[in-house]
Image (cartoon, rainbow, N blue to C red; front, side, top):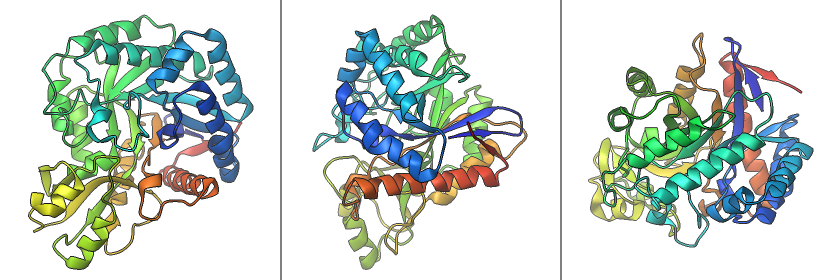
Length: 375
């Protein structure tokens, strides 16, 4: 979906396809028919944006075969779908039974990460609709803090490769709890020397909330550092107001699962690297917890838990409530639908849930004065 901001800029709204499992081209194409087009139809939208996740195997397949790229582009157009942003954070295996720390490998000290990201940028330049001003690729915040060797030489090669493309695609580093870049303050410091024409920040509002960051202050820090919000990931974290309460802990325990990391903070970082560790005594439980578990934007989790939806709403207001839009790519990214305690029972349930999240975001943007653009 597309919206016109009062400054005249076009704002793209998409949902991220890392919620779906596929690591070859046939699987990606099947997603478009199975989920993408039905979500668009449910919303009554002329066009729906997808934040495509192309795992390393499918990115390699497409990079080696221009005809395959043409096939994907035609299929997107035929189903009323567009791609102006990619999620390049997971490299591959994002739907393995256990992902946890593997999602941060390879990190930004390795040439493998650079090659993968530049492949994505080149593919996106070919897939973007002609009227898109630019593309974006979100990526990991350098690496996991305990595995990182401080080597940022690959970032210069990344910027150089992006500058050589015919169409502009920018790469956005996504602060995340437990990583080298965990907060916007760390982003401002550690990305101070990068080429800011091509590199910036992907602001994930679940991660922002888990860090107990205020949206206005966070955006002010990035702006002062000259770092653009290349992309916003619209997401919400799990919140427990009273984590010491036995009934609260029982509900929190239902969110413990083996696939993804669910970093947890009490007040501010540092926290516990996973929810089970927090419950086992990794956090004192004397003040509210926020948990890196992406929960649906439009609906609260089971009480007494809530979500950090207000942080998302506040961030949208800061980005779009003024006279100038401070980003133009918004991607709904709830990749955890299938590991929720009340996971959708079938495809229809997942389609309905994704559409409801997009509808919530659509209403927020319209409330902020943006006008939806039809074909």
